[in-house]
Image 1 (spheres, rainbow, N blue to C red):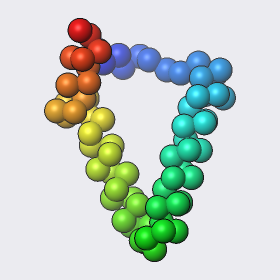
Image 2: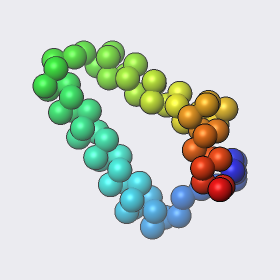
Image 3: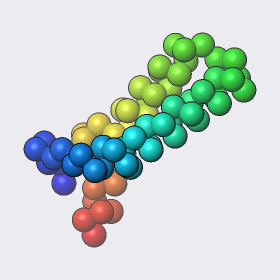
Image 4: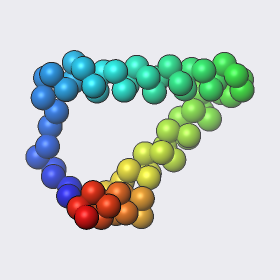
Length: 69
């Protein structure tokens, strides 16, 4: 279900996308404060999550199959 032409609407950008971005940033700040981990750990941590959302990853393929069923 990959659509390379998809783009969020201005409303989505101002509402849900901004909200999720702020939530993720807040949670990462909490993680760093509780563990004392360096920015490099957070950077690699986000990279691992990003890899799970790559269109050709096993995680992405399974998500899309579930969505289409």
